[in-house]
Image: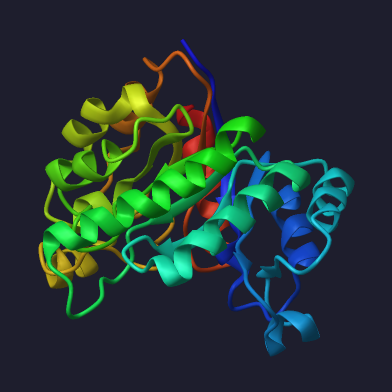
Length: 274
Protein backbone atom coordinates (compact mmCIF):
# COMPACT_ATOMS: atom_id res chain seq x y z
CA UNK A 1 0.00 0.00 0.00
CA UNK A 2 1.44 3.35 -1.06
CA UNK A 3 1.29 6.57 0.88
CA UNK A 4 -0.79 9.63 -0.01
CA UNK A 5 0.72 13.08 0.35
CA UNK A 6 -0.87 16.51 0.14
CA UNK A 7 0.27 19.15 -2.31
CA UNK A 8 -1.20 22.24 -3.89
CA UNK A 9 -1.21 23.54 -7.44
CA UNK A 10 0.25 27.04 -7.51
CA UNK A 11 -3.00 28.31 -9.02
CA UNK A 12 -4.15 28.86 -5.43
CA UNK A 13 -2.22 32.15 -5.41
CA UNK A 14 -3.35 33.29 -8.86
CA UNK A 15 -5.26 36.27 -7.43
CA UNK A 16 -2.67 37.33 -4.87
CA UNK A 17 -0.48 39.28 -7.33
CA UNK A 18 2.65 37.70 -5.86
CA UNK A 19 5.59 35.79 -7.31
CA UNK A 20 6.43 32.10 -7.30
CA UNK A 21 8.57 32.24 -4.17
CA UNK A 22 5.81 33.92 -2.18
CA UNK A 23 3.40 31.19 -3.22
CA UNK A 24 5.77 28.42 -2.21
CA UNK A 25 6.24 29.96 1.23
CA UNK A 26 2.49 30.31 1.62
CA UNK A 27 1.93 26.64 0.68
CA UNK A 28 4.45 25.57 3.32
CA UNK A 29 2.82 27.87 5.88
CA UNK A 30 -0.53 26.17 5.26
CA UNK A 31 1.04 22.76 5.87
CA UNK A 32 1.37 21.38 2.34
CA UNK A 33 4.27 19.02 1.69
CA UNK A 34 4.30 19.47 -2.10
CA UNK A 35 3.67 22.18 -4.66
CA UNK A 36 2.89 21.95 -8.38
CA UNK A 37 4.50 24.92 -10.19
CA UNK A 38 3.22 26.16 -13.53
CA UNK A 39 5.78 26.87 -16.23
CA UNK A 40 5.59 28.80 -19.48
CA UNK A 41 7.65 29.55 -22.55
CA UNK A 42 9.34 32.87 -23.17
CA UNK A 43 8.65 35.92 -21.05
CA UNK A 44 5.48 37.66 -19.92
CA UNK A 45 4.93 40.87 -17.99
CA UNK A 46 3.18 39.77 -14.79
CA UNK A 47 5.61 36.99 -13.91
CA UNK A 48 8.62 39.13 -14.74
CA UNK A 49 7.32 41.92 -12.51
CA UNK A 50 6.66 39.51 -9.65
CA UNK A 51 2.86 39.68 -9.82
CA UNK A 52 2.14 36.12 -10.94
CA UNK A 53 3.28 32.66 -9.87
CA UNK A 54 4.12 31.09 -13.24
CA UNK A 55 7.82 30.54 -13.98
CA UNK A 56 9.45 30.91 -17.37
CA UNK A 57 11.44 27.94 -18.65
CA UNK A 58 14.05 30.50 -19.70
CA UNK A 59 14.75 30.96 -15.98
CA UNK A 60 17.25 28.81 -14.09
CA UNK A 61 15.49 25.56 -13.03
CA UNK A 62 17.36 25.86 -9.75
CA UNK A 63 15.18 28.88 -8.95
CA UNK A 64 12.33 26.45 -8.28
CA UNK A 65 14.57 23.99 -6.48
CA UNK A 66 16.02 26.62 -4.16
CA UNK A 67 12.59 28.09 -3.36
CA UNK A 68 11.21 24.68 -2.42
CA UNK A 69 14.25 23.72 -0.37
CA UNK A 70 14.07 27.01 1.52
CA UNK A 71 10.37 26.48 2.32
CA UNK A 72 10.82 22.80 3.16
CA UNK A 73 8.51 21.47 0.46
CA UNK A 74 8.96 19.28 -2.62
CA UNK A 75 7.57 19.45 -6.13
CA UNK A 76 4.98 16.83 -7.10
CA UNK A 77 4.87 17.85 -10.77
CA UNK A 78 5.08 20.70 -13.23
CA UNK A 79 1.88 22.03 -14.72
CA UNK A 80 2.99 22.18 -18.36
CA UNK A 81 -0.26 21.81 -20.26
CA UNK A 82 0.15 22.09 -23.99
CA UNK A 83 -2.12 21.01 -26.86
CA UNK A 84 -0.97 17.56 -27.96
CA UNK A 85 -3.15 17.97 -31.06
CA UNK A 86 -0.96 20.90 -32.15
CA UNK A 87 2.59 19.53 -32.54
CA UNK A 88 3.94 22.87 -33.73
CA UNK A 89 3.39 24.05 -30.14
CA UNK A 90 3.50 21.02 -27.90
CA UNK A 91 6.43 18.98 -29.18
CA UNK A 92 9.23 21.34 -28.22
CA UNK A 93 7.29 22.78 -25.29
CA UNK A 94 6.89 19.39 -23.62
CA UNK A 95 10.46 18.35 -24.35
CA UNK A 96 11.73 21.53 -22.75
CA UNK A 97 9.39 21.08 -19.78
CA UNK A 98 10.70 17.55 -19.26
CA UNK A 99 14.32 18.71 -19.30
CA UNK A 100 13.38 21.57 -16.96
CA UNK A 101 11.61 19.14 -14.61
CA UNK A 102 14.61 16.83 -14.51
CA UNK A 103 16.88 19.68 -13.45
CA UNK A 104 14.57 21.38 -10.95
CA UNK A 105 13.48 18.12 -9.29
CA UNK A 106 9.87 17.64 -10.38
CA UNK A 107 9.13 13.95 -11.15
CA UNK A 108 6.04 14.51 -13.33
CA UNK A 109 5.06 16.83 -16.20
CA UNK A 110 1.29 17.18 -16.60
CA UNK A 111 -0.43 17.86 -19.91
CA UNK A 112 -3.53 17.12 -22.00
CA UNK A 113 -4.55 17.03 -25.66
CA UNK A 114 -5.62 20.67 -25.63
CA UNK A 115 -8.03 22.34 -28.04
CA UNK A 116 -7.80 20.67 -31.44
CA UNK A 117 -7.20 22.43 -34.77
CA UNK A 118 -10.49 23.32 -36.44
CA UNK A 119 -9.70 21.53 -39.69
CA UNK A 120 -8.31 18.14 -38.59
CA UNK A 121 -10.21 14.88 -38.32
CA UNK A 122 -10.35 12.64 -35.25
CA UNK A 123 -7.95 10.15 -36.81
CA UNK A 124 -5.53 12.88 -37.84
CA UNK A 125 -5.56 14.29 -34.33
CA UNK A 126 -4.56 10.94 -32.87
CA UNK A 127 -1.67 10.66 -35.32
CA UNK A 128 -0.53 14.12 -34.27
CA UNK A 129 -0.83 13.24 -30.58
CA UNK A 130 1.11 10.03 -31.09
CA UNK A 131 3.93 11.98 -32.72
CA UNK A 132 4.13 14.47 -29.82
CA UNK A 133 3.94 11.83 -27.11
CA UNK A 134 6.57 9.66 -28.77
CA UNK A 135 8.97 12.59 -29.06
CA UNK A 136 8.29 13.61 -25.46
CA UNK A 137 8.63 10.06 -24.13
CA UNK A 138 12.02 9.68 -25.78
CA UNK A 139 13.22 12.68 -23.75
CA UNK A 140 11.43 11.63 -20.54
CA UNK A 141 12.51 7.99 -20.34
CA UNK A 142 16.28 8.45 -19.86
CA UNK A 143 15.64 11.22 -17.33
CA UNK A 144 13.18 9.26 -15.21
CA UNK A 145 10.42 11.83 -15.73
CA UNK A 146 6.77 10.84 -16.05
CA UNK A 147 4.26 12.46 -18.41
CA UNK A 148 0.86 12.78 -16.76
CA UNK A 149 -2.10 12.71 -19.15
CA UNK A 150 -5.11 14.55 -17.76
CA UNK A 151 -8.76 14.49 -18.80
CA UNK A 152 -9.37 18.04 -19.89
CA UNK A 153 -10.48 18.39 -23.51
CA UNK A 154 -12.58 16.92 -26.31
CA UNK A 155 -11.07 13.41 -26.50
CA UNK A 156 -10.01 12.77 -22.90
CA UNK A 157 -13.38 13.67 -21.39
CA UNK A 158 -14.43 9.99 -21.41
CA UNK A 159 -12.63 6.91 -20.07
CA UNK A 160 -12.52 5.40 -23.56
CA UNK A 161 -11.08 8.58 -25.04
CA UNK A 162 -8.38 8.98 -22.40
CA UNK A 163 -7.47 5.32 -22.70
CA UNK A 164 -7.01 5.68 -26.46
CA UNK A 165 -4.59 8.58 -25.94
CA UNK A 166 -2.73 6.70 -23.21
CA UNK A 167 -2.25 3.70 -25.50
CA UNK A 168 -0.94 5.73 -28.47
CA UNK A 169 2.64 5.26 -27.24
CA UNK A 170 3.91 2.30 -25.26
CA UNK A 171 6.28 3.93 -22.79
CA UNK A 172 6.96 3.59 -19.06
CA UNK A 173 7.24 7.38 -19.01
CA UNK A 174 3.52 7.90 -19.71
CA UNK A 175 0.92 7.73 -16.95
CA UNK A 176 -2.35 9.25 -15.78
CA UNK A 177 -2.83 12.49 -13.89
CA UNK A 178 -6.38 11.99 -12.67
CA UNK A 179 -8.49 15.11 -12.12
CA UNK A 180 -11.47 14.45 -9.85
CA UNK A 181 -13.28 17.63 -10.84
CA UNK A 182 -12.77 17.39 -14.59
CA UNK A 183 -13.87 13.76 -14.67
CA UNK A 184 -17.03 14.67 -12.77
CA UNK A 185 -17.85 17.72 -14.90
CA UNK A 186 -17.44 15.64 -18.04
CA UNK A 187 -20.48 13.66 -16.90
CA UNK A 188 -18.57 10.59 -15.78
CA UNK A 189 -18.47 8.61 -12.53
CA UNK A 190 -15.12 9.79 -11.12
CA UNK A 191 -14.80 6.89 -8.67
CA UNK A 192 -15.35 4.16 -11.26
CA UNK A 193 -12.98 5.95 -13.65
CA UNK A 194 -10.31 6.31 -10.97
CA UNK A 195 -10.67 2.64 -10.08
CA UNK A 196 -10.16 1.71 -13.73
CA UNK A 197 -6.98 3.77 -14.19
CA UNK A 198 -5.40 3.41 -10.76
CA UNK A 199 -2.77 0.99 -12.06
CA UNK A 200 -1.45 3.79 -14.30
CA UNK A 201 -1.96 6.65 -11.84
CA UNK A 202 1.12 8.82 -11.20
CA UNK A 203 -0.44 12.05 -9.86
CA UNK A 204 -3.87 13.33 -8.83
CA UNK A 205 -5.48 16.75 -9.11
CA UNK A 206 -7.68 17.08 -6.04
CA UNK A 207 -10.40 19.30 -7.43
CA UNK A 208 -13.85 19.71 -5.90
CA UNK A 209 -16.86 21.17 -7.70
CA UNK A 210 -19.60 23.25 -6.12
CA UNK A 211 -23.19 22.08 -6.38
CA UNK A 212 -24.04 25.25 -8.32
CA UNK A 213 -21.29 24.64 -10.91
CA UNK A 214 -22.35 21.02 -11.15
CA UNK A 215 -25.93 22.00 -11.98
CA UNK A 216 -24.81 24.56 -14.55
CA UNK A 217 -21.97 22.73 -16.29
CA UNK A 218 -21.92 18.97 -15.70
CA UNK A 219 -22.02 17.18 -19.03
CA UNK A 220 -21.59 20.46 -20.90
CA UNK A 221 -17.87 21.16 -20.38
CA UNK A 222 -14.65 19.15 -20.56
CA UNK A 223 -12.98 20.67 -17.53
CA UNK A 224 -12.54 23.78 -15.44
CA UNK A 225 -9.62 25.94 -14.38
CA UNK A 226 -9.86 25.42 -10.63
CA UNK A 227 -12.38 24.05 -8.18
CA UNK A 228 -13.72 25.07 -4.78
CA UNK A 229 -12.25 24.07 -1.45
CA UNK A 230 -12.06 20.29 -1.04
CA UNK A 231 -14.93 19.17 1.17
CA UNK A 232 -17.24 21.98 0.08
CA UNK A 233 -18.37 20.40 -3.18
CA UNK A 234 -19.73 17.20 -4.67
CA UNK A 235 -16.61 14.98 -4.51
CA UNK A 236 -16.60 12.17 -1.92
CA UNK A 237 -13.02 12.45 -0.67
CA UNK A 238 -13.24 9.44 1.62
CA UNK A 239 -14.05 7.33 -1.42
CA UNK A 240 -11.25 8.84 -3.52
CA UNK A 241 -8.75 8.25 -0.73
CA UNK A 242 -9.92 4.68 -0.20
CA UNK A 243 -9.29 3.89 -3.88
CA UNK A 244 -5.85 5.53 -3.88
CA UNK A 245 -4.81 3.67 -0.74
CA UNK A 246 -4.99 0.43 -2.72
CA UNK A 247 -2.29 1.68 -5.10
CA UNK A 248 1.20 0.37 -4.29
CA UNK A 249 3.05 3.53 -5.34
CA UNK A 250 3.00 6.89 -3.59
CA UNK A 251 0.51 9.47 -4.89
CA UNK A 252 0.39 13.22 -4.31
CA UNK A 253 -3.02 14.87 -4.14
CA UNK A 254 -2.34 18.28 -5.71
CA UNK A 255 -5.21 20.50 -4.58
CA UNK A 256 -6.58 22.72 -7.36
CA UNK A 257 -8.44 25.71 -6.01
CA UNK A 258 -8.49 29.44 -6.69
CA UNK A 259 -7.65 31.19 -3.41
CA UNK A 260 -5.40 30.92 -0.37
CA UNK A 261 -8.47 30.59 1.84
CA UNK A 262 -9.75 27.65 -0.21
CA UNK A 263 -6.34 25.99 -0.01
CA UNK A 264 -6.38 26.36 3.76
CA UNK A 265 -9.85 24.86 4.08
CA UNK A 266 -8.89 22.05 1.68
CA UNK A 267 -5.94 20.83 3.70
CA UNK A 268 -7.96 21.04 6.92
CA UNK A 269 -10.56 18.77 5.32
CA UNK A 270 -8.24 16.29 3.59
CA UNK A 271 -5.49 15.81 6.15
CA UNK A 272 -7.61 14.04 8.80
CA UNK A 273 -9.12 11.77 6.13
CA UNK A 274 -5.70 10.70 4.85
